[in-house]
Amino acid sequence: MGTIKGMKLHRRLGSYLFTALLARNETTGQEQAETLKKGRRRPLPTYRLFHYGDAPPETELGGAHPFQFVAFESAKHLTPQPIAGCFLAEAGQEKALHESVGMLLADVNNRLCDRPLLLLLGGDHVPNGLADRLNNTYKAHPIEVVRLFALPESVRMVMGGDLSGYWLKKLRLFFAGQSVISLICRLAEADEAAYQHHRYLLWKQSFFFRMADRCDRLGIRQEVVAQALGLDSRIGHGWVDQSPADCWGDGDDVNQWLAEQIGRLFAQDDIERVAVWADQVQAERLAEWLKPYPHLEEVRWYVPVPSSNTPNPNKLFDRWRIYQDPLDTLQAADLLVIVRSDRRINELDLGEIPVRMRIPYIVDRYCCYPFQEVRSYPIHYWQLGQKANVWNETDYNRV
Image (tube, rainbow, N blue to C red; front, top):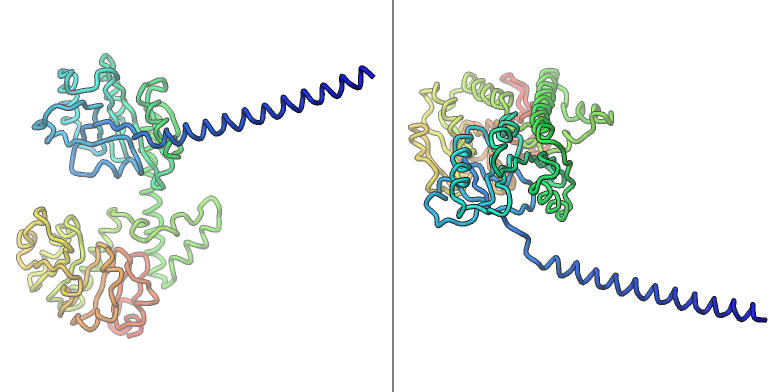
């Protein structure tokens, strides 16, 4: 009898302890949720970094980051504010980097002195080996070098440096909070990974470009061949699924293709007026390519919103004119060269092109328009990677 009562008491006590444990866990979970909510409301830390050159540094860091960038040249004239370090993303700026590091080491009031000075090298355009050279140069100083490059999806990145370093740990925790997966490794390993990543993509771009050129000569569709290759999981369809502009990039092969198409059309027809849809860098390049054609009367350059930085077109070429509407550049034009893309260009009514142009020749480096749609208009269209025409005098898009 006593045994039975003891069993009942044990069950009741166990039930009580189990209920109390559940209540405690529930309370703890609620407290943790409240803590997380409060944590999200706290502003993320921001660290000021010098940067160099004209390229926007944010592009090398993917999505969210904990930095505020200050141009080094302009910072010389600002009221001193704490600077956490320096950010370098391109070649040719090492001298300015060393100058700014020397200034920060000498002026303790202009830097955060409670932690090492950060030298952050980002992207795949940093000279190979620079990270190790900087690390050796400033080994005796309170300086930490971190090599970082973000992959295009902005959800993965590689970070290299001192595995016990203050900044490497800080950045890893920050990006983890942004759901970014980071591979942490030594400085030289991250630097070499960035170098080989760039080389591999250039090689792959060159392969697909040469494949597309061969398909053009054979009169077959390169995108079908690329899809067939992608059935092998070791190759995949990642390259094929990109937009053409992202796929081809801005390498020497692409520029050579563009120059060849323009040169062939000038040799084939009497072209007097050219419409150009391009940014400033491409416009300057096109100006050089068009110089050998003295019979060219006018170049009409589409610039959506001219700014104070937009050069006088006559300095590029003595017959260049700026237009803010892409359709206005087409009036009586013999050739349209497309080396930029925006919403107005992508949404353009293709039926307007043959109406406005004297000879509707289009060389499209950005592949702005679907090949099948262009074929329904009397347009002579050459698209990078898809030769829509047969280069002779009788067969242009079945016209």
